[in-house]
Length: 506
Image (cartoon, rainbow, N blue to C red; front, side):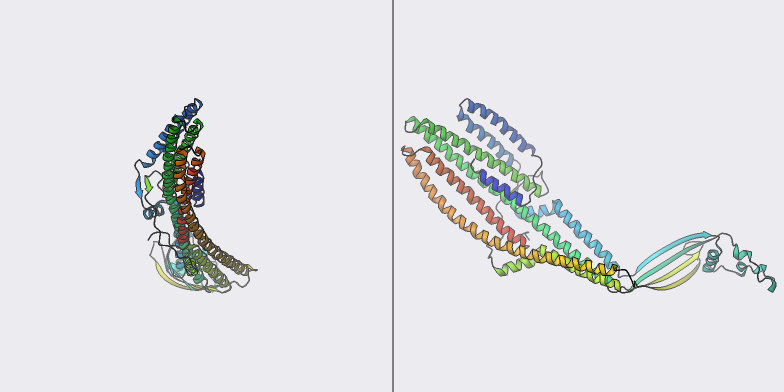
């Protein structure tokens, strides 16, 4: 029962941090769980037989088995190394990197549009079409008077004679080999606008990748600290068990002296059982946090274990200049700002549709019977394409581009407002936690003194046992609350650093 509320809080923190959960238990954890279930069944029988003195022993054995499962073959790892390992192995980061590669590839394609393109063209043909055959022979330099049917010309009287060689030349082959150089001359600014758009999208993808890294670093830190906090809760639960055993021994001794009732002994035994159950649950929570931590690292079957609480930075002075600096460095703001620049470039590219597109092509051909042989020839072509009427297509493209830019601008403004709100909430939460810790520590000091006095009074038979047990449970609860408050304070600082792009160790 004790510490269960804190375990639930840690579980809620895990859900907020988006830490992946294991779908299957590890073999050791599962064996420990089976052992616990077997002993729980035996425990029910023992209680039914009113042999409650065996129950603490059984719970203690199962909790010891869990401790063995955690400590066996563990490899301590620091937070900085854990982050680097996660950034290397975590699948989410690999997907973000792929997005950057995709944007860079598209940008390279856009950059190539302003450069000349050199190509090799090879074409072969065989035809008996008179026009084609005559063209082949001309391009090869093989045309002769006989191709015009000169042998059928006999004088003015044969002017209307249809020459057989010209009208029915038969099949003829041609192999055209050519190098061609295509040069963009003028695009109305479309090419430059598309290049600027692609560069902005690359920048947006890079900032998005950094944002994904920061989010992963935050999740790793949250999981790292939850495990260490869970271990501290185990220590608190162990102290609770020690006190419970002490209370049971005192109560049994007082019963032998007829100072206290037998019901007090039963109450002390029940308190010990609950304390052992709290210890068992705390260790189970530690196992769950460890599995989640290893999964985040991308090595779920490893033996890595968080080493000690990470010291992120010195005390943060929460003020307006720091908030403005954090907003300036925030990757999500940079991502949206780069997207906005891309949308503005898209507007310029759409406006270029109203202007002509001019290109030039230089071509060198060889026409013959084999590749690269035959008569060489050169061609220079200059072409222009200008759409004068498109029934609203170009106007619609500009309108859509402006709408996308306006939408992105709204998202950017909203993101700035939300981040500023988050920074203010972190400030207030930090002050609240600091005040809570002060009061909680003062309360614990007073409760320690009160428990010592209550123990003396109980030893003299002046107060019932439940008064002592109630005070001890409150002390344990306040210790757990202190650990939870410290954990929340660390997470507030980590959240601030993540939003300011300063969480990943350099």
